[in-house]
Length: 294
Figure 1 (spheres, one colour):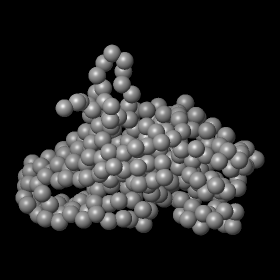
Figure 2 (tube, one colour):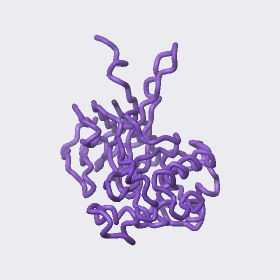
Figure 3 (cartoon, rainbow, N blue to C red):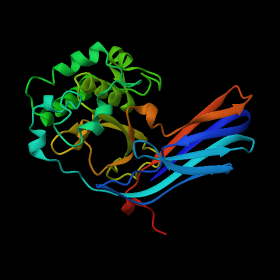
């Protein structure tokens, strides 16, 4: 799995400070064989750390003047499907509200933060009303979440031109279109506005090879989905509203937080007189058996 981010400028950048969430997490269902980040020009300082959510974060400082900055990440992971406690999923969704039910499960305290409003997943009235059709009184958690996922896929159109990185949940309701980041934020607002705890998950989705055709290198992209806290089991049910499916062994988890603002692939600050810049991103997620033989 590779992820290349390239920034190009029309004047020298004197200094560049960056933060990257590009190293996949070690998880019970995801084993990481290797993960590395390289930067060109070589940074004078690069340090890996762990943030408050347990994500691996790379901090770097490039102090050599440059017109182009390239950040390459390469990882090898093994993912297995997650199995869920079916009895926990059969509980009424109202029980999965950690602020209202703080003693229902040992993990309720840790889930509480993810039931609160966050900057990119505001609890707009449209989200609360939209979710009400799925979160009916006494409905099982698993059934309610699946229904909400189906409806988002049906009612909202995937369109890369409909939104930008600054678009809000209200914007997505107005356009009825967006990308995976938008649909994840929409789902978060829907669930949290009713008191449920849900977190934003950033990662990758491996595409399937078209029969008779080579797999397109670089056709994959960064992806986002949602994981909702399930009391009793203290599991987090992960679902992908963009593709209307529960998260599977094709989903590679990199990081999670309250919303995109906590876990962007790359962000930073530059010192320059440049007036124009361009960004190019290429991601490739390939099964090991698809790799070319040497």
